[in-house]
Structure formats: C-alpha cells, structure tokens
Image (cartoon, rainbow, N blue to C red; front, top):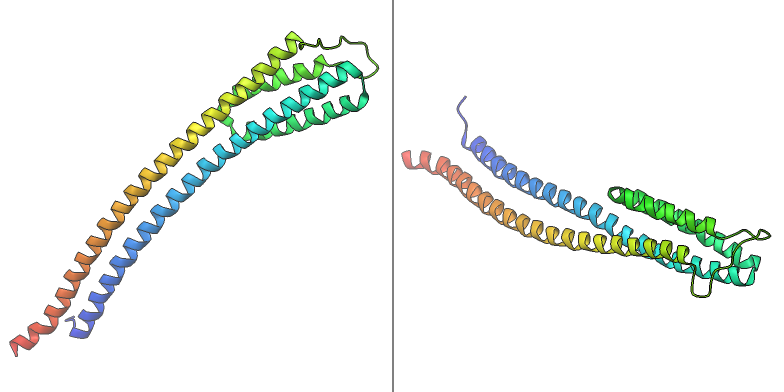
Length: 207
C-alpha cells in the first residue's frame, strides 16, 4: 500500500517522538538506578556511623555507672548500669543488622560487653570493688570495644567518601551520556524532518 503524504508525515513525527521518548526513558532509568544505589549505600554507612557513636557514648555512661556503684554500692547506680547495658545491646544489635560484613568484629564486641556485665556483682552479693585507677580486666575490655567502634566509624566514613566520589563520577558520566543522546536525538529528528520535507516537495517538483 502506497503511503500518502499525510501518512508519511504522521509516521515521521511518530518516529521523532519515539526517539525522544526512548532517550528520555533511558535517562530516567539511569538516574533512578544511580539515585537508588547511592541512597542505599550512603544510608547504611551513615546509620553505621551514628550507631557506633551512640555505642561509644553508652559505653562511657555504662562504665561511669559501674564505677559509682562499685564505690557506693547504691542500687540506683546498678539499675542505671543495667538500663544503659540493655540500651547498648539494643543499639549493638541494630549495628549488626546494618554492618553484616563486619559481623565478626561486632561479635567480639558483644562478647567483651557480656564479660563486662558479668564483672559487676549484683546488689546484695559479695564482690570486689573496682580500684580507683580502674580494674585492669574491665579497662582492657572497654579499650577493645572503644577501639573497635572507632575503627568501624573510620571505615564507614571512608566508605561514605568513596560512595560520594563514585556518585560524582557516575553523575558526570550520566551527563555526558545525556549530552550524546540529545545530540543523536537532534540528528535523528533532523533526518526524519528532512525525509518528511522531501516526501512533500518531491511530488510538487514532479508536477
């Protein structure tokens, strides 16, 4: 079936519109994928930093309550110690879910923390008070936990910096791709427009 001039014009414009839709659709897909990956990576690393900092703060509070209780044997300090310890374990569990790749290190942190909990005698039970300079065993566990959390924070911050750099590089690459697609779209649209114009002017030239 021979195409009329009207049908040729409709077909040509449909090709132009199709090219533009395909180019825009590809760009939207790339930007969505890039945004999703960056958001997931940055969210997990930022959460890990926040949780690790929270754990360091809780560790200091926990040790402070433990020392006060060991000196005064006041049950209030012991209850504060227990409450802080439960919060520490809760935040640590959240950090384990966030940092699955560093589960071994966090498992050691959890073991050291359990040792700290057992080192403090319950009210009414006999137990050795902490020395003024700090119990050597407790201090070593606290230093290990604190050092591990510091290392985790540093690694997470490095991961954030790396993700940011990768996001910037990917954005630049996507910008170049967008420019190339825009140029190709203009060329394709120009070619389609030229074909449409030719189909109109050729019959007139023949007449």
